[in-house]
Length: 363
Image (cartoon, rainbow, N blue to C red; front, side, top):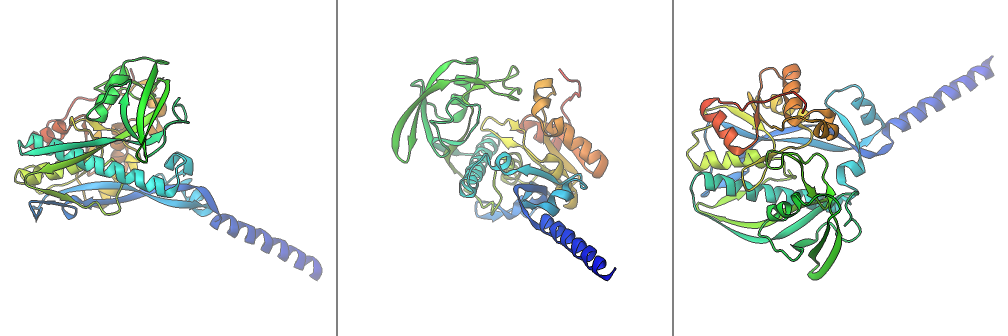
């Protein structure tokens, strides 16, 4: 009996050891969790001065950590923890390239924020266009073997553009399988690639209600912006494009005398293009939770009218606004989720409380 007990004890110990190893064993993925809602007054200086008003604009973030077995199990319990394969997060890029891409995104977001805010405030601003950077190339792209992350697009079918919007608009209505030729620079050397267009999934928007065609490349502008007064932005370790809307609000309100925040604690998210349109982002439910922890009472969320094609590809099959609204309703009832399509929509809400019309009806 004593020998049998030793065998059982050994088996139990072995199973326990395997279990412990399984919990700490690294997985090829990331855990996404609520990050912070950081006060943008810490990052933005205009004319050498910080924002000292009582109001507060927050940039919200999602925290990424390398996954292990224990972290993966936690995602099955917590509604605000998600596991994603590394390739889905980084696009198959190395950690160095991924970090570089996130930095490109952030710098582009800041440049767009300055352009929109200064134009709205009727303040002097000049821009110097440097080029269009390639941030990623999709698996569906017919250029996936010829165009690389970090290339600079200089022309499409011989046409040169002063920003990526011109490039996008040229391709948007071309339809599927139309041959195009791209000129690019790579490490200072010229190159040329030919391929065909694809229909871009989930690309319907107020600007493109029928969706867009393209070549499956994500781009960002490299624009040098000069303003008067001078704007200095130090985002620290925060990367990505999703802070565009909140940077624009911070810069505009600070530039025009801090009249909009009215001592409110305001969070939100959304990309910002140079024309003032707000774009969707990822992890918005986690950003609502971050805003709650920071004491926010207002949360701006990008709005798109839902349709079957969009919802098919959306996170949790809800638009940004739907997911943010439902998350707040259940877990952060003190937060008012405000839908926005443009920067002006956010201004209208802060000035008058007016909110754009929305629908949950699937088109």
